[in-house]
Image (cartoon, rainbow, N blue to C red):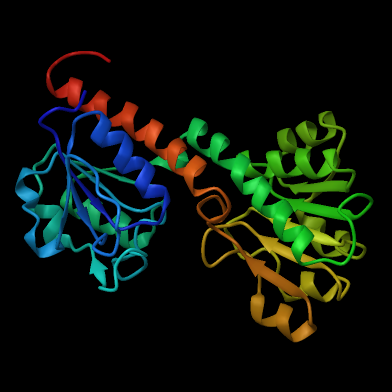
Length: 300
């Protein structure tokens, strides 16, 4: 249980509602920032303005999956007011206050390094990322169906990257009857792709491998689908970029060529917010209880 723990939940989308529900069940005292337009009420959780939060008494702070943007702005779909996480707020928290986010960026990295506070990134955990790949794959399949005039079965699909999401995407599209190939750099990834009975190729050969692709799904958060690559793609190719913003695609040149390229970094929160929220909530429940007991000198 998290009795007596004070936790601020700052911003987020529908996934955060499952987090709030879980933590209130664990008897934590929650302060919800950026939720004033939310009709639903949770016992043990109060809506607050950011300026009214006493950061000096917080045990934990939960940010949205995306953390903040490059200026510190926090996503708040349940609020019309802008919310920013600043250096002074972080510095005001106790030394053992822990912050939680899905991912980080240069802004957050700098702030937490200077403030000497702990930032836990949920999507760096294998369990969270693997569970989260399930709604991501379902969302990618949905987009492929919505934005093409041909079946996935029999189509040529290229998946870029064999991380936790890339592996799930490749397996699922292959199971639907697509002719899947996967691009990677590491020799062990090439071996794993071969073991999966999927066609491997090295990302150095990406441009030449795009000549007959119907659907290209990118999971690499780096500029990889460049103008040179796009120049070799058929005009009918659909690009689904699952990498975190700004994605790995040259969207300007794709539009110029008439290729449909869709950036979809938060599909779980769109297609299955309840399931995606439960994944985050379960992980946060375990992590925060672990920190709570650690402070008491106990082991979880």
